[in-house]
Amino acid sequence: MVKWYLRHRGLLNYIIRRLGIAVLLAFGITIITFLLANLVPNDPVVAALGEVAASKPDLVAAFRAQYGLDKPLYVQYWIYLTNLLHGDLGTSYITRHAVAEDLSTNFPATLELALFTIVSAAVIGLFFGVLAAYRKGKASDQVLRVVSLVGISVPSFWLAILSLYLFYFRLRWTPGSGRLSPGAPPPKRITGLYTVDALVTGDFETFVDAAGHLILPVFVLTLYAVGLLTRFTRTTVLEVLDKDYVHAATAKGLPLRTVLFKYVLRGAMIPILTIIGVVFGGLLSGTVLIESIFSRPGLGSYAFRAAMSLDLVAVMGTGLVIGLIFIMTNFLVDLAYGLIDPRVRVGQR
Image (cartoon, rainbow, N blue to C red; front, side, top):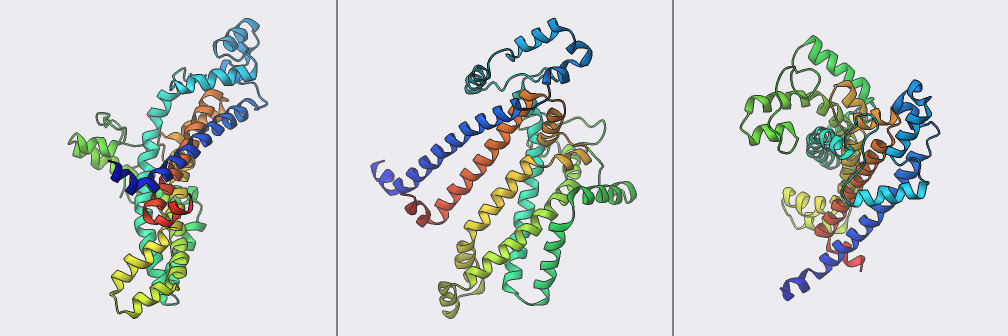
C-alpha cells in the first residue's frame, strides 16, 4: 500500500488539488447564480401568481412567506446554501415540483443527445484533422478545410429546420420530432437515456425508435462540432509534426501508424482534449434551440421556460447544474492531462 502510494503520490496530489479547486468554483457559482437570479428587475411573484392574484396583498404575502422571499437577501442565501448541502434545490414556482426532480427528468434527454454528438464529432473531427494535417496543401486538405468552415459557419437552427423539412416531411427517411414516436411507451427507467435503457432491458424496438429520433439533432450538432474539431486538430497536429522528436522518429524509418499514434497524437492530445471538453460542456448547456425545434425535452428547454416565467428557483438550480457540468468536464480534462503527460502533474507541485 505504501509502495503504491509512493509510486502514485504525484498523481494523487494532483487530483486532490484539482478537486479542491472544483469545490471552490462550485461555491462561487452558488453565489453568482443566486445574485444574478435575485437582481432581476421584474417581480417573480407577479409572474407566478398572475396579475389578478398578485393584486391581492394576502396572497402575495403568503407566497413570499412560502418561498422565503420576505427575508433579507443574505438570509435567503444562507437558507439556499444550507438546503443545497442536503441536496434540496428548492421548489419551482411554476411546476410546483422539486427542482431536483424536474432536472432529473429533463437532464437525461440532453445528456443522451450530447453524448451521441460528442462521440461522433470526436471520432470524425480527429480523423479529418489528422488527415488534413498529414495531407497539408493537397486537394483532400483543401476539401476538408472547406467542409469544416461550412460546418462552423452554417447556423444550427437553420440547418435543423432544413433537415427536418427535407429528411422527415419530404423524404420520410427519418422519424420526426420528440424522443419517441407518438404513442410509443418509454423504456423502463434505469438511467433516463432511452437508448441505453432500451438496450439494457432488451427492448430493441424502442431502441431503434429512440436512436432514429436522435439522427437529425445529432447530425445538426455534430456538423458544427466536427468543423471546430477538424480545424483545431489540423492546426495542433501541424505544430507537433514540426517537432524534432517527430522528425527523428520519421528518420528512423518507423511506420507511419507508429509515428502518428505514438508521437504525434500523444503530443497533440492535451489541447485537443481541452476543446473536446469545452464543446461537450457547451452541448450540455446550450442545446435549447435544437431541443425546441425537434420538440425534445431537455435541460436547455427547461432553463428557457424557467427564465421566461421568472421561475427564480428553477433558474438558480439550472444555472448551478450547468456550472457544475463545466467544472466536472474541466476536472476530467485536467485529470486526463495528468494521465497523458506526467510533466503536467510534476509542473503543478
